[in-house]
Amino acid sequence: MSNVQLANKQTVSEGAHISLQLWRRFYQNKSAVLGLGIFLFMLAVAVMAPFLAPQDPLATDMAHVLQQPSALHWFGTDQVGRDILSRIVYGARLSLFVGVIAVGISLVTGTVLGLVAGFFGHKTDEIIMRFMDILLAFPSILLAIAIMTGLGRGVGNAMIAIGVVGVPVYARLVRGSVLTLKGNEFVEAAVAVGAGRMRIIAKHIFPNVAAPLIVQATLGMSTAILEAAALGFLGLGVQPPQAEWGDMIAQGRRFIYNAPYMIYFPGLAISTTVLGLNLFGDGLRDILDPRLKK
Amino acid sequence: MFNYVVRRLIMLIPVLFGISLLVFLVLHVFTVDPTSVILGQHATEEKMQALREELGLNDPLPVQFGRYISGVVHGDLGRSLFTRAPVMDEIAARFPATLELTLAALAIAVIVGVTVGIISAVKQYSWLDYLSMFGALAGVSMPIFWLGLLLIDVFAVRLGWLPISNRLDPGVNMTVYTDIYLIDGLVHGIKTTFSQGFQLANWYPLGNAFKHLIMPAMALGAASTAVIARMTRSSMLEVIRQDYIRTAWAKGLGAKTVVLKHGLKNALIPVITVSGLQFGSLLGGAVLTETIFSWPGVGSLTFMAIDHSDFPLVQGTVLVSAAVYVLVNLIVDILYAFIDPRIHYS
Image (cartoon, rainbow over all chains, first blue to last red; front, side, top):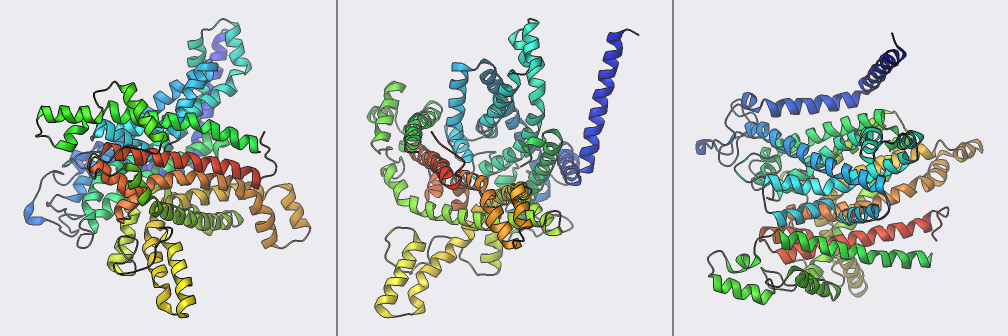
């Protein structure tokens, strides 16, 4: 066996060993495992919504409006007789979808901007980071509201608004890491052997920024789901009759005196999902990026 | 220090300009034609064109921005499309209510958060620590509007202890000086006590204002309480492992002195930053809380503006909130130097 093959084999087995170690540490963190469990459960509910939902989430039944939770309707019915459980099950699809896409927008845009700002420095850095400062100067939900008012109501625009609001967090995180990494010997070595800028960014710097990014993305998804619910509650997100958790709470608010369960269950669904993601994110952070443990 | 403050104040100008530009662009480039909001969808094209001309909407975008920014500098944020009143007046009339609510929420968050954080750190890995930290995590995981509605359900609908909306019961009279009702109620109580002698009725407006404030402040402050509790805990844990704390124990000082005097004083520095930063999320959260509790502040005004597609009003409320947020962050930064003598600004 040649030396190169042997070295490759060693690297692979080292990699597998580190993964196993990380998994063991994650597995020992009970709250993180619980968080992952909750998230996977919600994901399963979202994926299998058509099979799990007992009824059509949009089907109205005026003979059974505002029914208390019962064997027939586990979570009761709303003001037009729709089954609340079915709406929550379908709402999971939308909430997780909005969360994933919004975080995707923030993650990709923020990472690219952070890499460019940190690597190129000087004027490029100044311009990008001052723009990020301006985005950070807004309370996040207010900026999302302003963007939504500009773009108009709807789920697509909600994803864009939430995504834009999250960009500076990722940009700053990546830029900070790039600035630290730039002076390291392995980057200098890559420059010395003639690697191009894009190659250095993609192959040498990015992999080293990935861990804190994964942590931030997990925690960012919980924020995105909360913001999406808030926009839904304000009537800016998903438009009726689509089932969305925030909008369901807004509908239930009008019936708080005679049908408070209309607000209990959708709120519980949001809180449980977000709690799961927070527990999972906290656990990941402890394992992947202990420096952030604050 | 003085130079630092002046430099920071000067640096605020481009940030505030950037905020204005961003809000302007977002609301002018993408929004639907405001004339259709004012005149309705069935208005004739001539009428709409005339109104567009009157509002200056036919001018090139840079001209519109120039006009807008010159207005902002002079405190003119335009007129509401719905009420036709100046946006600045609308915001000024409602700002004290929001200030009262956010400060009350921040007070709850700091008092409860710091207390829970200290107990958690001192009793690390006890059931009390686990319970507090789970509570804190649940606090940041709950949508603010849901918590607000749960509070209404329990304390207003079921128990009937607290009022559901507004800042005072109808018929409660007191002279308004500051528009911050807790202060006005206090002044009313003191003044009437001096003139009429002590009577419980003199303090009724203060009590009533307090009762109206509790639930919205609790709902608004819950997430910040959780953040501050977590921050205090981790900061305290870091501090109580330092050598000087060990020395304090070795000197035979009591637990109260070691924890509160030596530990907390140093642990509080990052907590103050976090608390200051929380002010921004409280301003944002006020949109949701004020909407739920019909609290007549800037937050509910923003909601109304969104509902009526009143763009100048949305623009104004967002702009003012962002400006306040930036200013508060600056104040927190400056406070830093006073609290922590190790920090030198040049």
